[in-house]
Image (tube, rainbow, N blue to C red):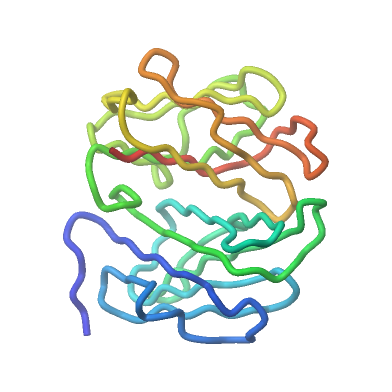
Length: 217
């Protein structure tokens, strides 16, 4: 079946079987804008791949969050097309930085907000030590038609400008990106300053790293 969502591509899963080798994500808690069924594969301790059929592209945006009453963090390692599918690799850790199995939620969006709403913006911040830059066009989105910009204000401290977005309202999410145990959090967001993100090592020291940031209202 193909019931493609017009206005971008979108998918999400609740990965609720952390020790299972491969399974179909709960149909109640998953979605694919092309109408297909998403699956999750565990390749090792704390290492997972989410497969989103029929919405593959070398573009878009990912958010990942650990789930449940466990001391864990999860992040996006990378995402890329495989045939027509989109593969999203996820890695999960203890708070101390060791790999661990855990449940998580994952959302993928391309050319739309992570809630399929507007106003919306996202960016993959892939130049962690650059003083200021415009994120890659394939991995940024701004429903107002402007270009998002990222500025580094110190070790692990970043400001994200999303022109045309009314930051006096709405919601911001951030997920660290890469294979290590560094993590990021939203510091704050205001109309005058934009979105501020802070990133850390597992021990809590400020650290420069890649991340994914999104805004929706």
